Image (cartoon, rainbow, N blue to C red; front, side, top):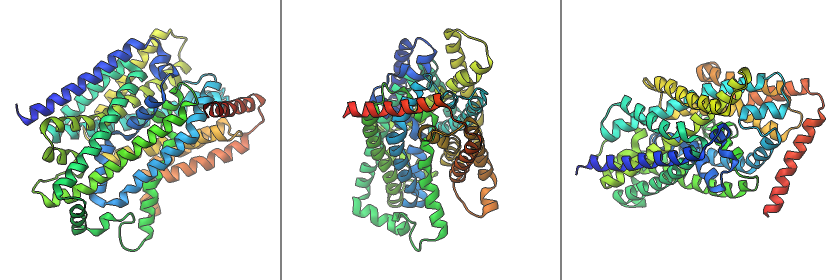
Length: 503
């Protein structure tokens, strides 16, 4: 049996397991509400691991190790910023959002929460946020399909296009029918696979190089600055801007719909504490493994005759060079898990945005069965459009993900925080801020560096512009509303009661 046959066998086992979980979820999904939010019954471990797996995507196994391999520890500020952002998200946003979405007419999506929380009778806020969500998720899903195509090129020397199609088809096979529950349960398995792979590969690679001392010596031989969090040498303005840009990834957490929807799906507010501990532990181990993989790769490819054509494939290339074929197959499956877990979650949230926030706003009353069908058709449609965009990628995986991440963080992040923590936010303030944030991301990505002379990640100006515009417009349009004040107080009291009972 050839090496490639073992690798393919491992992938077949993985694919079969994902489809099996999807079938189980399909049997548990009876209506549209269960399809998009699993009946709000996710236990803490499922909410935590599915949030982590859907968050990290292909960039954890490919983009981040590649960036570390090229630039060194200065790129680790991305991991630091993400860890801090995720912790704050679980600590402050998760319990309040779980409580408030139930108080606000049992909101099932982020756009519907905005509308219900702010009593927006114009429907403009819901439609605009639903449209923004669909646009950025199409880009995000496309970036994951790009990662899938590149994976198949390295792993099997196959066609990039075949890889894109295969990842899309297998992910659709369990997402299309299993819905949110299928995506969440497969995320749990995929999250565990990713963590194990990111523990095994760097340990084996360090051993192959000759231990920690020899690994560090080899990295210094290539460039001592690779082991510095500030890039070595004097701390320049350019370096500071780079560190701010990398750490600013953490801002994005407050506005990522495919992550915060897990908060809404938890079975109760008290689950947030346990989920936070599980999720952050998984995240620290996985991110640390990805960073170490990138660093060890510098030493490994210096000390061995193995060639590395693309830095983003450093984890895969080391796996092929060091591990038995069957184990390599499961490492490859972990890379696919990182990609597919994110795709499935984003497709489900896109589906809910289309049905709940666009179709139902303009459409007639529709039966639950028809809504379920429309949700599945939307999953298929977004996947097809993203697949077309992935045929000719114009950037690296990390850059593609960075743009979509900034789009969501700058559009939804300030709105979520203000909805949960500021009584005086208005629907017009939230809408103006959201549109301003989204436009700023597009404009800054295209012209920001040329106009300002600063290479600053677009999430920073987008987030700030959104926050300022939302506060200013809200102060101009605010009128007291007793019912909104009562709902705000009820949501906060629900968090306090659950925390007291949990303690």
